[in-house]
Amino acid sequence: MPRTFLICLLLVVSKISVAAELTAPNVLFIAVDDLRPMLHCYGEEHMVTPNIDKLANSSTLFERAYCMVPTCGASRASMMSGVRPAYNRFVNYLTRVSEDSPDTKTINTHFKQNGYTTLSNGKIFHHPDDQAHGWSKPAWRPKGVPTYRHPESLRIVEERKKIKGRRNRGPAYESADVDDEAYADGLVAKKTINDLRRLKTEGRPFFLACGFFKPHLPFVAPKKYWDLYDFEKIQLPETYHVPENAPAVSIHNSGELRAYAGIPAKGPVGDLTARKLIHGYYACVSYTDAQIGRVLEELERLELADETIVVLWSDHGWNLGEHTLWCKHSCYETSMHIPLLIRVPGVTDGDRTDALVESIDLYPTLAELANLERPKHLAGRSLVPLLTEPQQTWKPFAIGRYRQGDTLRTVDYRYSEYTQPNGKTLGRMLYDHRTDPEEDKNIVDVNALSAEVERLGALLNKEKGKPNPPKKKPAAK
Ligand SMILES: [Ca+2]
Image (tube, rainbow, N blue to C red):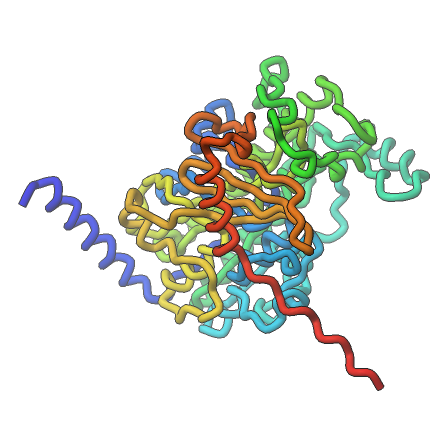
């Protein structure tokens, strides 16, 4: 037997035996709102994210992980339920599992029913009362924490109270010389640390979900995190324009951003503002990274790390000007691509995998790692085999959607189609990731690719989520 193979075999056997010892491992589930893989460990070398990088060094890092729907509530509902979205299920940021998939047992409920203490801190479900029966205590969020701390921001907020409608928010960003716990995420970390200390003494396995609110807009972070980046070096993306031949339906007006002070109602935001937004996003990523570091340090200090699986996940990507877009809400790679790290003590050790994986894969993964039964409704595939063999052949696609768009990522391509409920096609896109990873040229109309387009379209329509049946109308009295 070749020596290399023997070593690999022994490694696999030893990893599996260590995993088997953890019959009821704890789970620390870290969700970060609106975090694209803008992290040092994802090759963004200018980013200052030492704590997530350290976590990556003992995790498996998923290079090609994708969300199901690039908007908060819908993405979280799909991930927590393990159910695929469809045009009438998990549609927008206000989604509730209790409304769109009411008979589904979500992951928190599954763990709770199997003897786990389940807790939700910060933002997990969009609505804290959605699936409340699946938490051991009511979902916790910081109360009464002001969004802004800088005096100038507070003045702007006061001034804009006179504006009617939705476009009356405060500034899109602020740099205030305050402590970490002046903002909500510092308190989410503090609460989670206190929970870890208590859970340690209680001795029951736990599923502790910890959801950070940044880098979601507005980009408010203590000044020290802004100071980690040189504004003069911050540039607009090379793709700060609509891709060649892209259908109009694929581009939006970045409406979420427009609600903030200093942002015009339409059109470009201005290069200076654009660079400030990018700077603010970076600052918020580093701020959140520091909060994650506090939680992970406490996990180590309490000697819980060896019996706790750690997941770091984001609900979707974010556009920092790419394709003229800000925020999420699109079928482009920049909206769909997410960071995903899974650390299993004694098993993962800094491997990376480029397998195509989806958010709905997390529920079966964690159920398997905790030796729980796999609920029959789950649409995803457990990622456990990738933890020991990260380079193996994996599933050939990741599928997501947003409003009228359904989008398919394969190893080579991203293919998207936009349709009305009556089946009328509004537009299609094909980007070749081998030659165009920035998605700058839509080649869906290239004659030589027509057979490939047909194949991808058939695959997308076969595998995408099947819609909910029409709701029954109340019987006439
Ligand atoms: Ca989000």
